[in-house]
Length: 127
Image: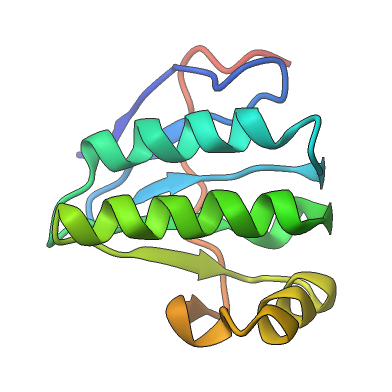
């Protein structure tokens, strides 16, 4: 059975889900300099539960805008993941995020999944 952590990154409501095959986070909306700390916190929490056989998957399907703050958060998480022998994957990135990764040269650094991980019920999720 999959475990679902009820922890929230902060007011941006970015829960960390421990699924059987991955640790998922699902940020939503606009991520910029002001909101990036919530993403960084969620990535750190996810990495604490990741392993070489359980990577972190960032479900990007709910993101509407990303600036370089997202790129910095992803790159920092990737460095931390490498130290622990795991991977940060990006799932369903939109065109704007894909373009940001391409322009910055970071596209080759992240495995990309075309679809987000399956939804799971998150206990304690605040709306």
